[in-house]
Image (tube, rainbow, N blue to C red; front, side):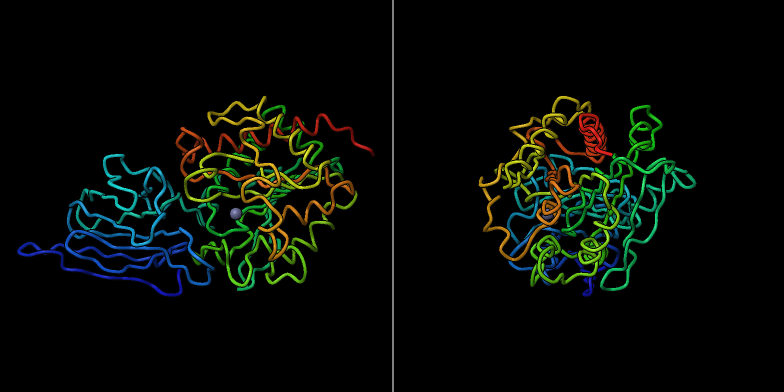
Length: 400
Ligand SMILES: [Zn+2]
């Protein structure tokens, strides 16, 4: 929850006085309310600790009466091309607002269907620790799954690590996924759900993978930022994904730099960092790999992208060139990394010394080209990704 809780009540009109209560007093909550006037709530993201503007917001609105309320953004570019999402089950499942309720680039409405109804709203589909706990329950007792504490965050929260394997033999390969180096980038966690569902599905190809590989997933790198509803992106003085060179400022990035090489040991490994791009516009409304500068590593990324493009079975489209941002293009330049190395650059320092490939994958919040993003098709893409990695490793000959 945010450090500063916004809870407002408002008399909207006479003679029938309806009220709405807005708050962000829950995990991941984030909002600043500028005012509530008549039937309209004026809101923007809380940018505490952030350099410049970003767009993460997540609030709960409770309407006293069944009625339509209007929500007007007072900061530009904080609604997606589809507007926003809402949840009527306390943030566990999300739906896009009806297109008829997406009134302009900074205005949407919502009709509360009964009195004292609480509805959560966000530009994305927020995902915090409790979402993960609810998801993972179905796998309790599964012998192919081990969950433990990777480290503690700066504020003492447990940062979990998930290990998936058959744990019978020394693995030939290790695969690492990390997410939420940028706290706000929640769509990464639906990819992780898809990856875990695929791995534990009992499908022969996945069981073959688990017989030879150990997969580690760190689903919340910036755990404090996720739970406290921070932007995380562009955190001052530098964010978690610029904290992988020099002396790390954050406990989890320091622990990754220390413990992951120990975990990988002499086993060939792969490292994937899951992100979400900007909220909308050119280059932000598609899935893409972020190309590395090192030519040999770029080639391995392209190989993985090619395999993903030809093996994918889920509904979201992916092509090896269209969905790949080559180093030197757009923002993917060394000038973007002046504050420090991102995870993938740190991992790249092990390339040729055990690391087979690393890539950042940017997964959009609302649209993959013309395709609307949902939690379910995001999970499918996670499944496509782990199958692609399985194929990728099939093409690699273990040296031991
Ligand atoms: Zn990011």
